Image 1: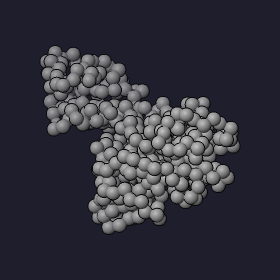
Image 2: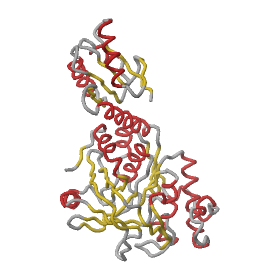
Image 3: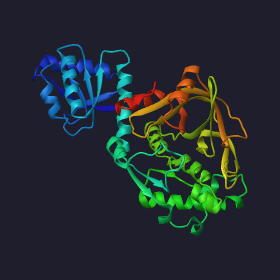
Amino acid sequence: MEYTIAYFACCEDKTIKERSVAILNDFFADDSYDFDQNASVLFIASGGSENFAIENVQNQKDVILLCHRENNSFAAAMEIASFLRNKEVRVSFIDVFAPNANSDFKEIIQVNKAIASLYSQKAALIGEVSDWLINSDIEDQLIKSKLGVDLERLPWNDLGDYNTKTSSEEFLKHFSDFDPKPLQHSAKVYSLLDEVIKEHKLSAISVECFSMVKRDRVTACLPLAVLNKRNVVAACEGDICSLIGKMIIRSLTQIIPWQANVAEIKESQILFAHCTAPLNLLSSFSITTHFETNVGTAIQGAFKRGKVGAFRINATLDQYMLIEGEVTETPRHSFACRTQIEFATTKDQAKLLKNKALGNHHLIFPAAFIPLVERMMDQLQVKRVV
């Protein structure tokens, strides 16, 4: 990997510059770097560089300060960080001599790229936020100011009738082992959603489909499963918190998590369930009816086992819940939505979810990415519920 670094010192001192190059060569031992004063990664070589540094980052949203214990570098970086934070710049602080400094730096680079990627994305709510999601909407302007994401709200009446669409052959290929006849309505819903995504240049959607279920006895569970497999964020029930949470995790991992209900909390075990799931997160699946209505089509899948995290961001984008656990079983209880997992965790985390939950839907994703999610929330100044 090659990095671009802005160099700041108190003066044109050859000794300081030579020492700085030696320090950076050690820090980037497995990578390469060059100098450019317009970079968002700043190497603070010495004290007295404070004013030079802040003049070069006027338009930056995220800045990384590299510093060390010599030549008042650390002191200068502390002053610069304080000034920039007062200007609402997101500042990351790396002592290059600290243990794991290079891995921390690379994580921050990944997180900053993920945050920057959100600023070019556009999402849409199709229909309305479902009536029962009384704590799962987010103000459009808050989403824009916090994450840079534009959110459109598209009523079903503005999108036309799915029945006028052609059944998507692309969609049906994902279900080649099943009889295509019962899937024709779902294939038409997929065609409609795919057209909307392309027409509005969307990166993500949240779909409220119960009005369509009640009217036409057809669901969007399978279309959402395919869209998520295609790496297009597709949330259920018009849930905006899940939509934004999915976008955050995808920006970091390129994996779209599973949106699930909390169906039961035991002493150290949680049952999560929902009627759709990204097909690529399942080891196998069958097609059945939607749980609450017993009509349409839904996914009943065997979730891949392993360690996972369960994540949710709140409706004011200033708190998040994140618990860790392991998928130990994929049951088929008759009292919950079709795809289900038993999530084994600690007593303390189960109690935390029960007593301090930010809402119902949680997003299930591989546990290997938990440190990145934690760091991104820290960057965005979103506090973890503890």
